[in-house]
Image (cartoon, rainbow, N blue to C red; front, side, top):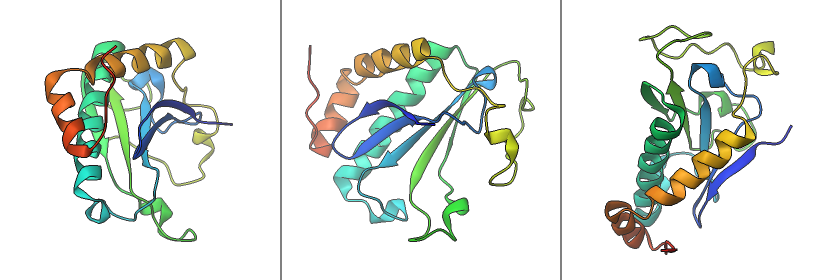
Length: 162
């Protein structure tokens, strides 16, 4: 199964995993990957760090707006990659939290099963194509707001004003 690209710029790629850790019914799951891999955020340039924050803010807001979620959770852990070739790679998980939870417990930390657990092989639902399109459209709208434009400038990124 292939992950769907939701957004991309010169430093990062935002994807919707086909086998999410948080089902769409519980609020959904997106992942922000750095194109040139690093093991920790402290290895990013200042431009990449500003862009990392810019994208995390825009994506979180877009998830609130499009998915009508109650809360956003952002996680940057990387523990499952410790024993892989090259070690863990820095990335950021976006977990929307719906007011009514089906697979999770409202008000509690997201519950994750061990790496490779069968629950990650289709039981938890990804976003629909229509939801991904709406998320992408909202992200592109939001990044044109003044504060995100200024962050993009500091990161050395040009945002089209179309």
